[in-house]
Length: 146
Image: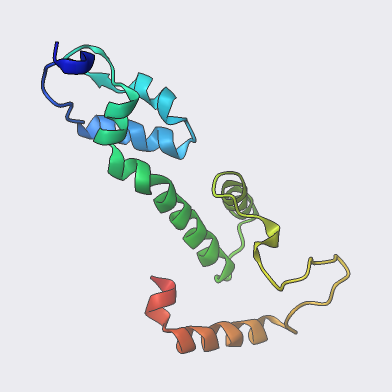
């Protein structure tokens, strides 16, 4: 044994499979302490420690959830700006963004809550499309659409 009770041995190097498992579990909201049980150190045959997990998967821990949230938000935006409607997809995306990304209805500052009797913000679809086109031109189509 090395000093402070640490095991003398090689540094744990994650495989592609380990990385995929960690990403999937992170996206499902599994706590890091529980993820350790799913990553086995081939040298010891036992689950990695919390510190080893955090060191070996630092990048995945830092960006996996944000990357997924960005993809879901982008997909919701894409659906909102196309002619085809897909209520189940929109419901799933908004559920994810509210439950996993912490989005709230109040996030739209300055936008009053919508009544069922409220008048629409624009008169018709043609006006809405014109507004969207103006914004795309003003801020740059590539920048807003990826």
